[in-house]
Length: 129
Image (tube, rainbow, N blue to C red; front, top):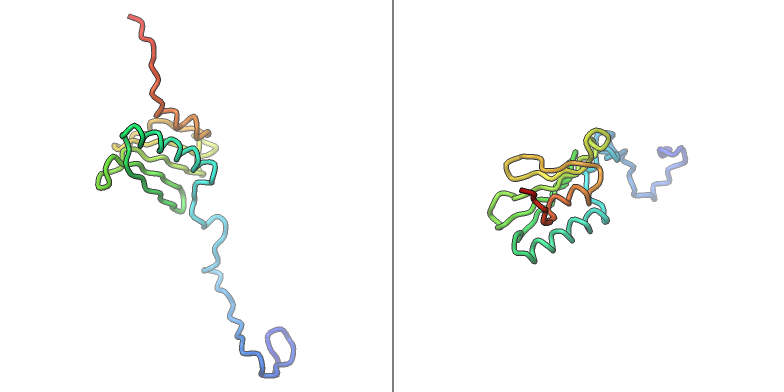
């Protein structure tokens, strides 16, 4: 008797070759989208500032097939105040990053995460009367 490799089967090899089904193979396109280390550094730095200002208290991260979401909460049991979304499919159209308010309004969208997160910077502006 011969094994699958074409050699003689001497009966000593207990390993059984089972082909991995095509439907179970996970390609790069099927992997969930996630924030990389640089993006998480920028987001967590903002989160730390907002926690120190006593505005945010909790966060959650979701890695979905089409987007990654970083949600921030005022209290643990509330709906998220804001969601920072990374959607790579929108990278060439509107920008991969967006900040969404609790009511679903997109506050800012763009290709650069630091510029999108600038929506949280509280700067004083001169108002002429």
